[in-house]
Length: 69
Image 1 (cartoon, rainbow, N blue to C red):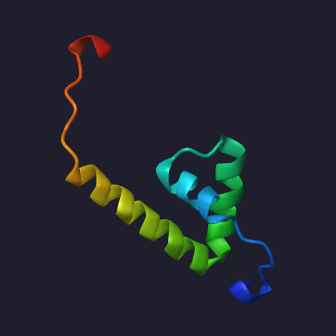
Image 2 (cartoon, rainbow, N blue to C red; image 1 turned 120 degrees about the horizontal axis):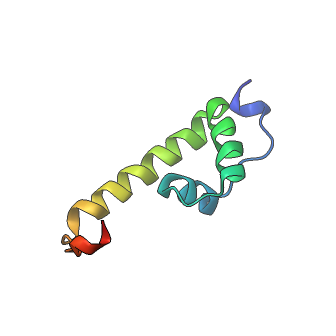
């Protein structure tokens, strides 16, 4: 199956939530299956994951209480 034969794609918001781990189990399963066939959306998720990584490294660490564990 090529990208040309895929008629519907997840929205950017859906892909961002997927990349951040904020999708429901059902939505995550559907998007994961879609990504196995769609290199275009896979590339978008990769870019969103890179942006999230940069965001994490550019911000200060937050101290957590030992009581949280």
